[in-house]
Length: 130
Image 1 (cartoon, rainbow, N blue to C red):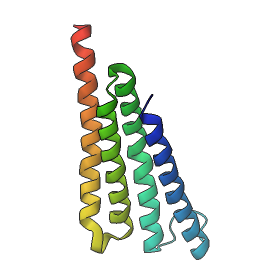
Image 2: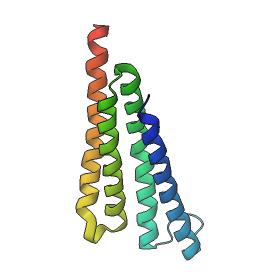
Image 3: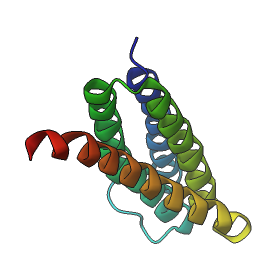
Image 4: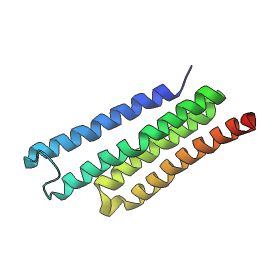
């Protein structure tokens, strides 16, 4: 049984939450494009965009790690770390004054997950190709 699809489903729901938050604020401020100079809409758009920028590559790497190395436990922990990191990052983005540390931890852990998965794949793949 694969682990990555379970995390993909959780991230899909978080993505929908972030998108609905942007839509809600666009309706509130009657802004069809951009942020209209509204601080909370700017934060919501960036939280949504940041998620869209980092989560797909992490999920792709997790899926490849899982399918090539069959390391379900590694993928489980990478996914758990990424999920916690992205939730922390959302709080840090939407409430930056009180939760800045959450944003910072969220980014560090997100990048760590991407790096660990990448290194794992290099370790697995390179010796076989040399």
